[in-house]
Picture (tube, protein in one colour):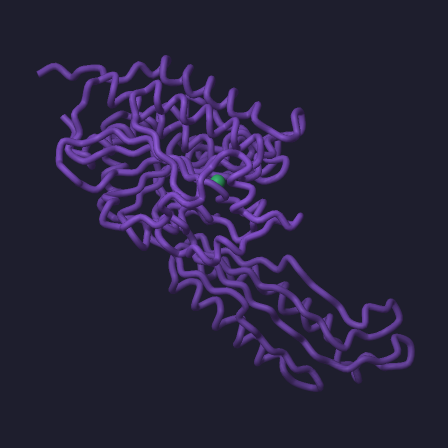
Length: 417
Ligand SMILES: [Zn+2]
């Protein structure tokens, strides 16, 4: 049998551009990037656009009690779980046009291809557009996905306020949403979750590879290291009589890049915050407090680095210096579903689209869903690795490529014919 050409790539690409351009106009800061906070007037505009496209494409549109949007293409199996595909549609203040929307738009276009090619899926296909992934209005982040899987209960949601003291429920009602609609979704109603996202880093662009198949979303650890020494006069204390808390901190921090490199496999270690006390130009510091952010796709790497930082702390605790390490945050790395990862790779190869494995250094809704359903994620290149800024840009051709891969994967997962 001859292979039918099922996707008109140029047409899909043109529609993607038009969606992205339109969505980017729904911003509170025109000319200064996308600022689309959850339950804002711009949220409402984007929401209406996404819903109208879902309807135009023939999907059944529903919203839940958080304002997440679902566009469903029914399957032939009664009550069967859905293959979800989408991302979030909120933004950070003065962010870009692609972080979030690229994935929502990809979901829309996968559904459009199902319909244009008159596919009949056994399992439903659901395009989803999630709220408040960035946490820019209500903090915490990943709110839409956490809500769907039941990690954000009714009571906690009712208590949520933005920085101006406006309750989330009131903000919802203000744009015509109904917080009394069902919120949590039974994991049994989900067969898989697929998400396309921009990489937000330089790797794919540097390698000149259009598709990154995400293997894992990195775990995240934050340590707080406190070094205690002895204050003293900068002029009268001889060098060999000092217990300088800053010099010790500096020696430790200087070793972190090597430590990360030795661990390998993409492990990264960062100190981004350092406080010096008493912080006077003529006083030997008696205390420093600094952060250590450790990330890796493999939990083993993260645990090794934590241990090495602790060992380092012990080795510097001498001659009037005391170093202590406190763990403030620990999030396990989330591996993507192995079968979906290989499915996405296989489909990329079959389509002749170069791909590579990649880890996600940032958190995504896929991370939340991964504890409840089978999750797969694709990255496309970010120009200059930039994101969360107005310069954020990705090639619509890359989004169209990803749509093709996701379409083929979704066909398989929904058992469409
Ligand atoms: Zn995002």
